[in-house]
Image 1 (cartoon, one colour):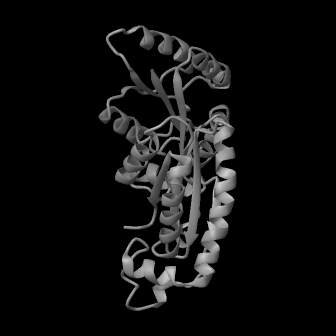
Image 2: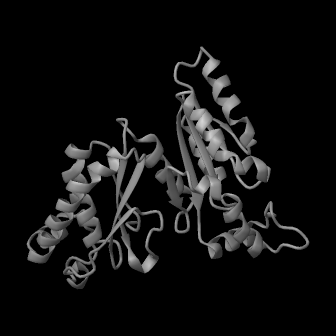
Image 3: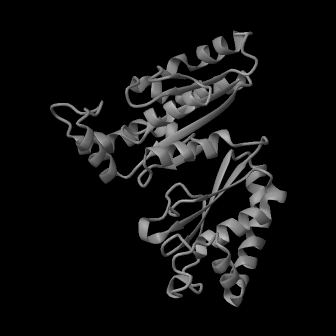
Length: 285
């Protein structure tokens, strides 16, 4: 059996996540009381007609606070039954969550006559801290629309051809903000920028003209070799520590040329070594 627990602050995309999982064969339950987790796992395993049952549940601030506080021991009970369980936490910055609520006119589950929306969003982090601390994968949805979130979930959760740590090599542009869910970040803005070459500006780091230009730069090659040596040595140790997901982020100014080139080159070079390697370009439209 595989169980995915989806949590996160209100407005972060939990409903979208459940919809995406349901579309990919998961039986989904919204707002499950956390205290029922162990019973759910046991019942799902008893359905003999399902050889490999897939179940996803959301657990969030609508739960009783006492149940949320017990989440670590409840999760331990589930995993003691040898259930393959991933805890996914979605979040976005406070400003984005405020904007999403104002646009949809939905009521936040923690708001009241004495608690404003901004206060509810802030307090929700504290309430969900037992889940945050145990999340296998955290996804920042601040800059993701509905379709990008679906694609990210499919890549991270459903595209794991082999067991073990899933490594994501992600390019990004600093001008849109650094990904807060990254485990390792490399800043490559010091490298020659193809953007300033008029004949290369409209291409990306996946296109041959940009690849050939960056391949010819001594600084680029030195940067690549240094990063490769570091990752080749240390990423297998991340895997040995039983991490389910590791994100390596490579950033340049716009997220179109240098970071794309290096994230793609590093990911492809490390695939034979790490096996579970995924590549994503956050800001490449």
